[in-house]
Image (cartoon, rainbow, N blue to C red; front, side, top):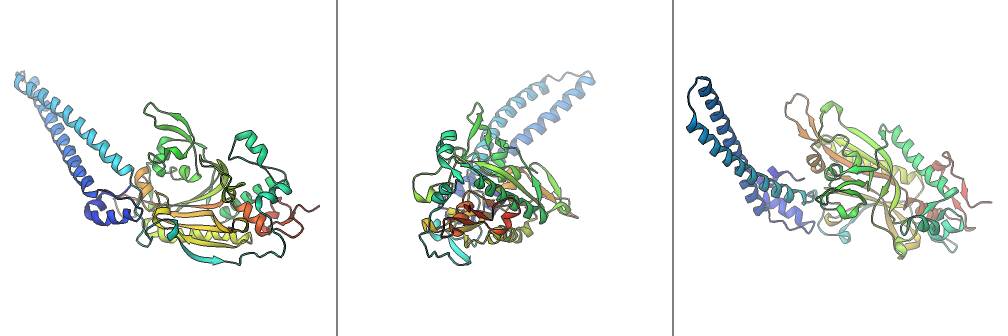
Length: 427
């Protein structure tokens, strides 16, 4: 949620920032609504105060045995006015909240306008693999080596599902163990959250009310609101760990990570860029999350980016870092860096980690604050998240970048200690 005080102080700056996302907002219209809402709130408070004062006078007169018919009539009239004023305040409050709920976060000043075409490569690490033999795509490799069963995955779950089998399942689990071990050693607290979340969790994360159609809804309320849903990413759970809490400054930063499957309505198609495990309804991911002081959030994002890079580099993969333009940045985020691995079969890079800073946007929605040392006034924390990492695109990159002329695949060294074979397909 955006800071209303910032909108009041500099409405044109807010409008221009949102235009970078191609979102044209009538900020003056909202500020007029905001003024009317605040005036209505003041009116209600004043009427309630007057009603309380008159009620006290009536009580005093009754104790003294004095008639209070005139004041009682006044009290009744005030009660009617309060009812009308409260209804008006509720209506204006709902309009005020709805307007703010639908606004995305403001992109940071250094985030450029536009969509994917304006994403900027920050750096590239390693050299694109070149093969002196006819290279295979990840789908063919996975099928030849019996690592992934696409046909039976579809039979069990429908389009957008697959089954890891044998050495493929061992490789998937080795990747997850590699991530978990690395993050625990770095001092992050391991969390295994529920996979079914409430509406409030989705709201705080910025998923609702605008992006309801992206998730699998399990229960709807009478108003059609998704009361319970399958989590689309562990971020949606982790941001809610401290919802409606005020932390001491000494408790920050709070660093967590979680492993979960992720459940999303998006699914793959028949295009080569979506085949295999590149896009589906369910995939595995380890997610990093931090709650930090505002002055520490820029550095925290770079730290998260370094952690994601460390994992990809440890797998010996060629990758690059891309800074996303405003329209390609998630609605709840102010700035995002993507870690993208090279996939030879489609001659393109695919994202395996998004490292994002929400600033105070999620904290405002979730009422997550901290109390600075030596100060009585609580302030909103900043929240950050990073995939570290998602496996469904990482495994294809490993199969393609580390394939050998005889059809086998060399398994990266860090995964072997977790039960993965040294070479996939070797007899």
